[in-house]
Length: 229
Length: 229
DNA sequence: CCAAGAATTAATCAATCGTTTGAACCAGTC
DNA sequence: GACTGGTTCAAACGATTGATTAATTCTTGG
Image (cartoon, rainbow over all chains, first blue to last red; front, side, top):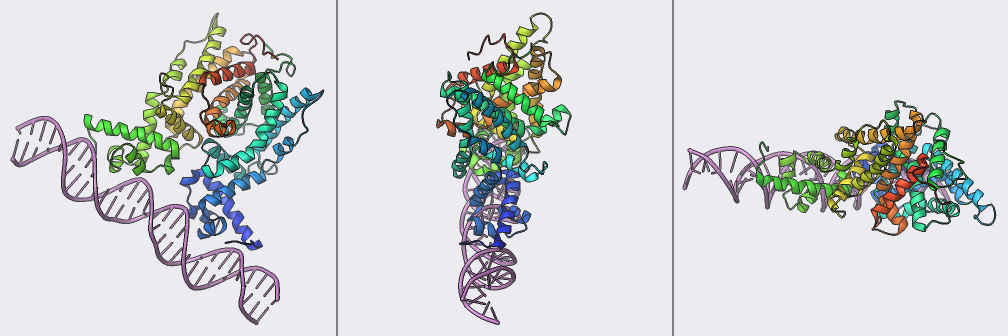
């Protein structure tokens, strides 16, 4: 067991985790082998059991590693003040816009200084896999991480559409989040269809589209005076 | 080898394929074992190699089996008459609505008359897995299947919003498809969030939501007289 | 400098993987 | 009844899986 990890082992631990993210993202949990991961991390495969008490533990630690490095921007927003009293509607509208922008920026770059971060790319692929088919051991971890984002979004929607039921509000949230996540997960196809390998060249333009589409879909006339035509 | 299969073997072949769809959908390609599939099909595991020349062959055959039985509804729509002349706008609007309904129904159930078809459910789960992490051997098969759906959707959007650029239309299509596909790809997490393992209990209600949200997002005021505040 | 403990290693474990084998089964046909 | 070709089966194959062991190296506080 690793009672009190030393500095030396931290390097190996991190290398294993990052190699695990890459490999799990490429081949899935069952497709990836600990020998392959260890080879990628230039470490011994036995260290997986030693440091993480098994393959499943390494997988969970990889998820935690992703959550710790991301969720930076959206997490701040979740701390926004409660929406009540006069001006609550305008505040909720602004928070929703900020939510979309922050989420998109979190989606597109793990490390803002490195837009072509392969680890961030793999991390999102791994998250997508996990969201589609949650493993029993990690679904709790996933929920715990996603919950505040969902709550924050729902809080905004509830103020903006107080007439809707909770189920309808969940549908609205699902549509909004769906656009954003699908955009990220289908970037490869989108670039082929558009014949532009650098798409999106201007992220702000995409953010604007998603914001417009979502607000109109939500049914908030005052936010968008009139959709022309 | 199976030069000319007899009637007797067709039963076994089909049982293996259907068991494969169920198992591959549940556990993925690597997670599912040949012995498990054969046990489910009440057949011998050696028959996988005999009939399909291996696990990979069985997987491809399972995908072909899905494509042959599905793609029925959306495929019909892709054959719809060209949209031109007077009434083109109304026709495009109806086709878009039909597209969303057909796509959702194809996503959720294989046979519309049997909404609780476990094979259809598994088939779409398998497709969703494949769409997110395409296997090299099957990506071409998948693309060929998807392409007409995208074309048909874009054709409708072009009529409904002739004022938009091609890039903007692609954004619209991305938002619409994103909702639908994300809905399918995140069913696992959605059921956790809603605390309802049977969600969606009423598919029509979901279809209605996606249709409303998409038409409003598209900016088609006549389709939805007014989103009540 | 030197035990003590953490970290790493090569070697090995039992289990399972997909596949192969060779014989048996089950129609039909002469 | 013997023969044939497609089908099915139990058994075993070699390879690989995740996990474990015991010995070794590295690090560190006394």
